[in-house]
Image 1 (cartoon, rainbow, N blue to C red):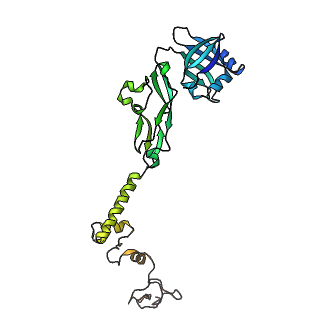
Image 2: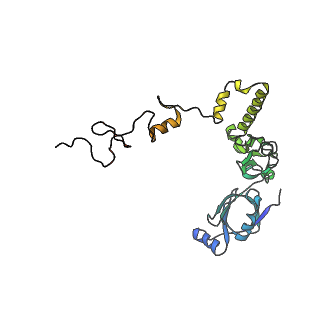
Image 3: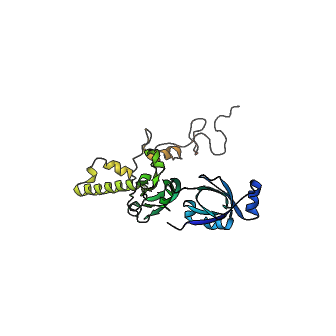
Length: 295
């Protein structure tokens, strides 16, 4: 366990929202309060620079702190911490006094080890996911761990590490597990690579297909023609009745066509004689209608 973090505080007499704003803006101090035990709550003021430096340490949020209040040192843990949403600077801290003979509930961080050497990641190509970064535990102050280690070495693809799988120090319990087995949620999991099962099945099919080719003709096997169609063979297209079938038949029907064999394309005149031309109904030449003019 690392050395205890020490903070120096003074009793704050000027209270209220306006006084707290002045402390932060003009004096660069952080308002706080300490409560718990048999001693009445006390409003405190701490140095902003001291708090900023201590907040860079991970143990500041989960370990027992020594808060010196005008010469009297009290052991406490952080129960509430407020930050400015824009700058992230700490605006207020709530401390709770602790007693050496009473159990406390504290959130401690999780440290994941052997992530690179994880079986599910290294051998199966899975993806490791952290579902939790801290866990709430219950213990005496003397048994409070700085962190809990989670070993991911033997976790296979598709498996998870649950709260019940954590290796806890002596005298430490997980608070969630006291409420039933349904609270045994996963802490970390290794997700199998997408398509891994399909790839294995395809590889097995390929190996079996090669075995069939070695034993006999694949074309005689059931489903061989269906496989040819799946590989891109297009079935023969049929035309309408009276056509030769396919695209060429439709093109001949809808497109321009020449005279059929034995067909006379000359244009008959009014008297029924063929006078020549290219259109079957419009006379050609000077445009005059030949025949009796009447009169």
